[in-house]
Amino acid sequence: MNRSENVIDVHGLQKRFGDKTVVDGLSLQLREGEIHGFLGPNGSGKTTSIRMLCGLLTPDGGSGRCLGHDVLRESAAIKREVGYMTQRFSLWDDLSIEENLHFVGRMFGVVGRRQRVERALEGLGLGGRRRQLAGTLSGGWKQRLALASCLMHEPRLLLLDEPTAGVDPKARRDFWEEIHRLSAAGITVLVSTHYMDEAERCHRLSYLAYGRLLATGRGAEIVAAQGLSTWAVSGDGVERLSEALRQLPAVEQVASFGTQLHVSGRDATRLQAELARFVAAHGLRMDAARPSLEDVFMHLMQGARDPLER
Image 1 (cartoon, rainbow, N blue to C red):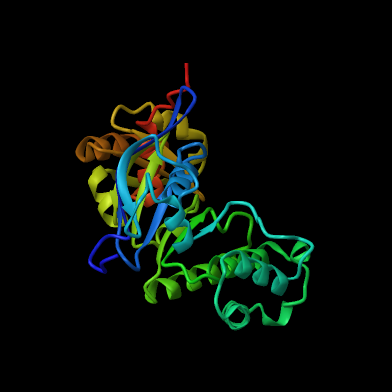
Image 2 (image 1 turned 90 degrees about the vertical axis):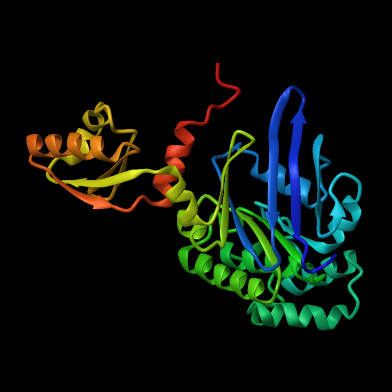
C-alpha cells in the first residue's frame, strides 16, 4: 500500500440481512494515523460497517479498499493487518493475561512471540498481573488486555467497537491516552462510541442512523454545517416548562443539561425573539450557548426515520 493512499477508502457499501438493509450506501475515507469516531444509536449499522471493513462480512454492494486490499475479494489479507476489538470481551476467562496473549500470538503466527508478549504486557501496564486469570479482571483491565491482544500482530489499522462500554471514567481516560499514542505512531483507528466526550477526542467523526451516513467531518465542521442556534434557559421551575418550550414555532429541540434547558433551532432571529418573550413571561433567564456535538446529533436524529417503524 502506498503511504499517500487512504487506509480506508470505500464507496456505497451496502449490507442486507433478509429484507432488512442494515448499511445503505456507506462511503468513508481514513488517512494514516487518523482517529475516526463512529457515532449513532443502537441499530444504526456501526458494528456491521466495522465487520465489513475488517473482512468478517462481505458487502452486498459498493466497492473500495482497506489497507490497499479489495473489501469484496481480499478479506483474508485484510484480516491479517487489522486489529479488531469487539463490544464484548472475547478472550479466554480461564487463561491468564500472559497465556491469552501467547494464544493470540500463536493464532496469528507472530514471529518473536515471547518478546512481543513482553512488550504488550509492559506497554499496557499488564506486567504485574500477567498470571491473573482474565475472568477475574475488572472491566478496565479486561479492556487493556483486549487492546493488547489486538496489537500482538502489529496491525496498521485498529477497529474498535464501543471499546469503553461499562468501564469507569479513569479507565476510559487512560484508554484514550493509549489510542492517541498509537495514532501518533501511525496506527489508524476507527472507533464506535456513544460518549460525546470521546467523540470530541477524535480527529474526525461520522454519524450513522438506520444504515445511512448523515454527516462526516471534523466535530466543529459538523456542528457548523447544521446551522443551529442554541440558548441555555435557566431559572426556578424551568424543568417543568420543557414541553411548553417545545411548542414554540422556532424551537426544534429542547434538552436538559443539569439545571438548564438547551433550546435550539435554525432560525436564529425568530428563535431569539420567541425565547425572549417566553423567559420574560415566566421569570427565567436565557444565555447564548454554543451548540454541542450532542445538540447537533440529537438534531440529526430528529430528521432520521427508522425504516422498520410502521
